[in-house]
Image (tube, rainbow, N blue to C red):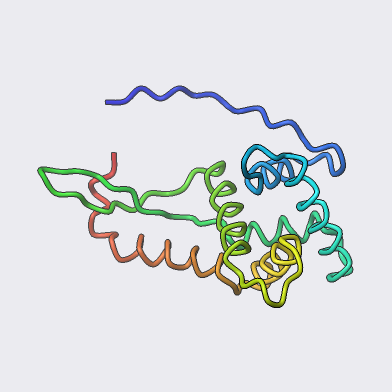
Length: 158
């Protein structure tokens, strides 16, 4: 049996929006340790989002994240030499992490032809997530479908 340490990671809110969620978004966008580049991209995306939707960008992005957050996921569990995909409920902190990751991955996967910057791609993906369409929502539905298909193994939960 593994010992789990119960601790909460302190996330310092960003300076412009005073939001921990924006800080997590910036950290997820960041690559090669270039936080200033990631910060500029996220802030550009948020201002572009406000421009395009004409509503408060923070409530809009929070609603989009709520739509993408998964309720269930599958975890591999080894029982008697066989591996089973066991459906488990997702913890709240992991829900937000997965939603942010899926939106960013979907934005990065978008084609470059019709978008000028990563900020534009991110805005397009957030708008689609808010409307419950797009690749991030598809990822959530696939995760739920996998959990539903494997609910016969739910008695293997640990």
